[in-house]
Image 1 (cartoon, one colour):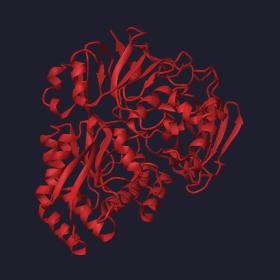
Image 2: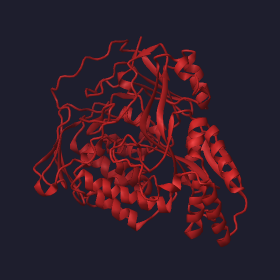
Image 3: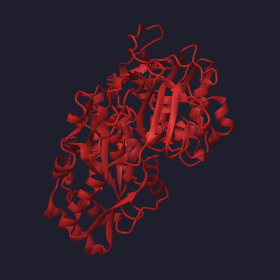
Image 4: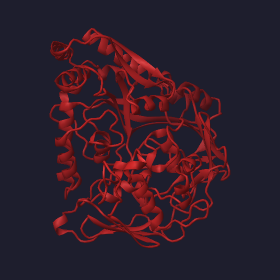
Amino acid sequence: MKINRLGIVAISLAAMGALTLSGCAAGTEKAAAPKGDSKAIITTNGSEPQNPLIPTNTAETGGGKVVTSVFAGLVSYTAKGELENEVAKSIESDDAQNWTVTLEDGWKFSNDEPVTAKSFVDAWNYGALFSNAQGSSYFFDDIAGFSYDADSELTGLKVVDEKTFTVELVAPEADWPLRLGYSAYSPLPEVAFEDMAAFGENPIGNGPYMLKGEGAWEHDVKIDLVTNPAYDGVRKPANGGLSIVFYDSQDAAYADVQGGNLDVLDAIPDAAFETYESDFPERSVNQPAAVFQALNMPYYLEHWSGKEGELRRAAISMSINRDEITDVIFQGTRTPATDFTSPVIDGYSDKLKGADVLEYNKKEAKKLWAEADAIAPYTGTFDIAYNSDGGHQAWVDAVANSIKNTLGIKAVGKAYPTFAAALDDRDAKKLTGATRAGWQADYPSLFNFLAPLYQTGAGSNKEGYSSKEFDRLLKEGAAASSVEEATAKYQEAQEVLLKDLPTLPLWYSNVTGVWAETVDNVVFGWDSVPMYTDITKK
C-alpha cells in the first residue's frame, strides 16, 4: 500500500501567492459514524510510558499512543497520512516564513477551560525552553527565538487575539503545517503550568479521549481512557474509551487476543508469523508503515569514535545478513533497508551513493574490522541491548550470530525487561554496547526521519552524532522551494549518514496486527497505529 504523503508543498516561493491549509473545515459534512456499542471500551496493547504524559516530553510509542488520544493539535492525520484540520480553522502564509493561525470556535479542554491561541503559545514556549529539558524541544528550533543552549522565549510566537496567533520561522518552510499534527504541538490548559509533573500523571487534554480519573494510569499495568464529552473534532470516537494494557511479552498479548481477552493487537510475536493470518481469518493486517529499525553504537564507548569507530561501524553493518534475517525470522513482514527513511514516504530511494555498506559482505567486513584492530585491538563482548517486552529477542540473536560468524568475535543480546528501562540506560549513557533503535514517524515526511535522530542536539539523537555537513544539507532541504529540490538535499544528507553511520539501518517494518471477533472497523494508519476512534465493539 502506498501511503499518501502531503510532503513539501510544490510551490515556487518566488511566484507564490497565499499558502493556506484548509483541511476539513467547520461545517464540512462528515461520513456517518460506524455502528456499534458507543459505550463499549476497546482493549488494546501498549507499553509503560517512559515519562509523565506531557506532550513535549513524550517521544516514545508507549506514551505517544496515550498523548495522541488525549490531546488534539491544530491538525491531525487520516489513516493514509493526509492532513485535516482539528483545532485550526486556517493556517496561512504569503511567504512560507510568517504564518497566521486561526482557531475554530468552541474548543475546550476536558476541564471546560477554553482552548485559545494562548493555550498553544504557552505550551510551545514551555516545550522549547532550554531549562525545561523537554525531549521534543527541537521541534521548535525553526521558530524565531529558539535556543539550544540557553533559556530564550520564542519571539516568533505572538498572540493576536483569543483565536489567532502568528508564527515567524527562522527561514521559509512551505511544508511547515505538515508537522503540526505531531503531539509536541498540542495546546496545554493553564492548570498544567501550576505543577507540570503532577499534570503529567493525570493530563487534561482536548482530544477525543481523557483519562478515566484518579488511578486511571496504573503504572506498569495499564491506562484507562474514556471519551471526552468536550471533544467535537474530526476524530469523534465510535466507542466509549480505551484500556491500554501493558504486556511483558507480545506472546502473552497474542494469547489474550486469541482468548477474546484483548480486542486489538498492533504487533505480532515472531512465533506467530507463520500462523497469524490463519489464526485470525479476515482479521489481520500486514501492510507497509512509516517504521524504521536500526542498530546504534554510542560514540562515548571505547573503539566507537574517530577513524576506528568509522571502520568498525561499517564492518558491523556489512556483517549483518539482512536478507536472510528478514526472510527466516520475519517471513515477509520486514524489508532490508537501503536508506534511513521508509518506502512509504515520498522521496525514498534505494539508489543512494554508499548504500552498499548496508549489504552483507563478509570479506569486506573482515577487512575493515582488521583495519580497525590495527588502530586499537578490540577485546571483550559485543552486546546488543533490547527490550524483552517488544518481541525482539529472535532477531537480536540472529543479528548477534551473523556478526559473530562473520567477524569471529563474541556477540550476544542484552535484554532489558521493559522499553522504558532500555531507554533510561540510553538516556543516562550507560550502554555497554550496541542498542536496538527504531523510529515511528511523527508526521509523513523525509525530514521527520532525519532531523529528530541525527541533527546536532536533537532530542532523539541519543548517541550524540554531530555533522556540520549533514546539518547544512538538512537546513537547505527544509528551506527548499520545491519537492524536487528538497528531496535532492535530503538524499545528499543521507549519503553523509551512509559514510558516518550514526545508526546502522536494518529493515523497514510492516505493521502486522490482529483483532478479536469482538470488534469491527479496525484500520491501521500510515504510522502503524490503529485508528482507535473508528473501532466499534459488537
